[in-house]
Length: 198
Image (cartoon, rainbow, N blue to C red; front, top):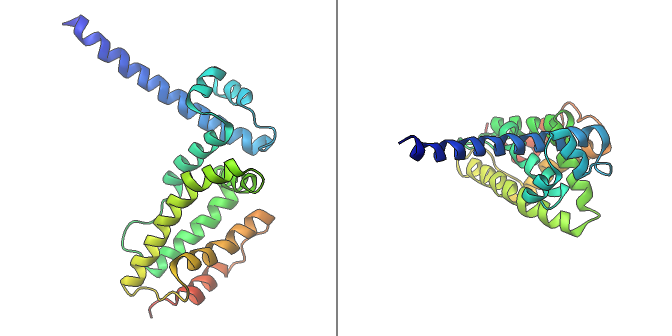
């Protein structure tokens, strides 16, 4: 019986070690990006900071862009989830405020802005960024808006895709230019573009 049980224990331990190493790589990439920027970010530096072999990183990720995408996806799911309950004007307003804070204050927001900027210069990065992060998130956000409209909570002036672009665009622009989001910007966007009920 001990011999039979020993293999599952080793497998579980290996899985835990793999997960710990994976998280260490993601956190190292995030930290190094904030400290040194995208240009100075290398797989070698990530490996040193994470305490893993460079070969381990290349076995799991083909490039630093893919590492940053995994970091962004995981951190966004934890710290900036798209609301799944019945959306209201107030919950959409809160989500936009959380998004502005995410871009300005969260290290993962720096990751998003970095990938957005890098996508302007590299077609491969643009394709992967859109496929893995932007498109799934935009689908969820449009669904949020559509459900709010169908429930009569909001009456968008534009179609769902244009509405989301108009809501998020000014916030992203502020973040990209390093300026603070004006105090009443989110309220103005929601009131003018969504025309909340009541």
